[in-house]
Length: 240
Image (cartoon, rainbow, N blue to C red; front, side):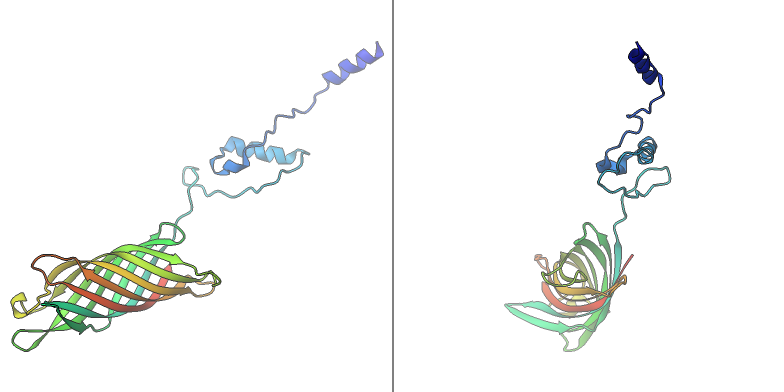
């Protein structure tokens, strides 16, 4: 009889609810609601051991919605000088060297090692006229493409080999006319672009320096002068 009464008294006592502080899924913290966060805090206040894992801070948007981290963007300012090989027909070419000109690129990161870019480049070169004189040609280029930043084995994480590939639009303009040249370039020309270079980041800085060899070749089009070019680029990149 005494044992039965003791059992009834123990059952009548207010015992803590073991399931009140349920543990949310630590693998899906980005999707936690306020209710799950409170449950986790209640869980930590209990005498139960803390499970292995890590609670990370999740950025909140204006309405309390979790937002993914922003991918970095960049701007590059460089100087480029190039040699332009103009097709004169009959297997003959004429090479013209440009004056160094500015090149501005802007872009962003698709992945940690894949970037996209677009921008402007401007330089000037000379071209022989049919009357024996020379005209100064303005050359505007609008490139766009992808860039791979690869880290060679055994090198620091702040050193990259750059591989560029894309397309570009070239505009040549002058006070002369197309009829003044044996191989006229004036007007718009589309081209393919390729580049190979090296880039290194200054320690604890958003600044990088790069140097590249970049080439391009115009699309083959009937009745249009074809050309190809090879240039050297050196400049600075700022990441923000």
